[in-house]
Length: 455
Image (cartoon, rainbow, N blue to C red; front, side, top):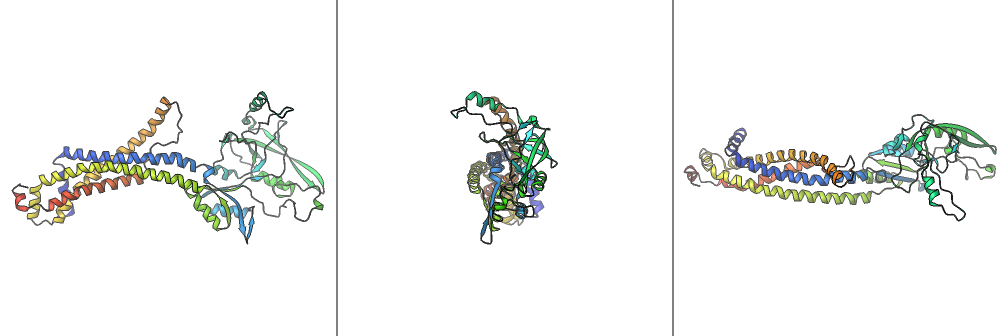
């Protein structure tokens, strides 16, 4: 019997008792859907919780604090090191924080900006790493800057006992927001010393953005962020790297000791971080750059433990869901056993005309496999529909009954393609195994008794 004939024979037999077939397929679909929906909770929570954590810069960042060269440890990196780190696979950005080595005495409309430092950053890399703005936009030219969220806040004045009154502290906290300075000009003053004589050069920059408020309440961001273009202008004025100023007694210093680096030397890069494209790749990046001599630190070990917890959780949920599919297999076994009994005469005829026992076994295995496959398809479709409904309805229910706002990107249920495939394989495998015993029984039917319809 050809394969096409076997499939046609199975289809004809499945149509003979549609109600029983429907209930068997329904049970299989319910078991498959239960498996997928249950496991999807684990995948959804991992994406919403773990991936949210691993997407944070604190987790995806690999701090590169030095490099070993010829047996020596260098704590400062240069542009070649930055280029190498950017070439490493799965590194989406390399950031640095170069502090200008002098106070630029910034003012806006005559108001002195106090407290913070002036930091040169790569805004493009910082954006990829998660540097956000609360207001405004990022700089597009060298004369545009971003200010910290708390740049207009000042420390409250203390009294003679060194204490700060609550009223004074509250008044200081209620200073005007930094966003009011967007579009205004900030006056900067660059100091250089030539032959012991101090010279001052004014610079003007436009405030175009305000950095995002730090997530930790005790962190105060009152810094001024500039780009490479403005840093180069400052360096060209001072004639030194990072705008450092020559000391007054420079001539008395030992050559090179305590002296600023001139422009003919490579620029040092401080606070270097290699940002991974995903928290899963942090450990591999750290190991790769460490083998190249770069000293680094990350929290990849803690991340592995968190992922292991969710992996165990997902395996447990899949196991529990598989039990539902196994329960549905009882219905498949019962259906196939009754099919063998009802089709005893057909089996006898096939044997009488010379059908091989393997062909008869294959026909019944095909039928049980079709039941499992059809149930899996229906179960997968239902599971995706339930997943969409749950993700849409639960946030509204939580907001209505618990008065809690759920983040917009939070997923309670997530069905990756691999989970759907796994559920289909489990359903199909269980269905075939359930039909194996009835199929074997079909090959043992006696021809004479079958033709007499006496099985």
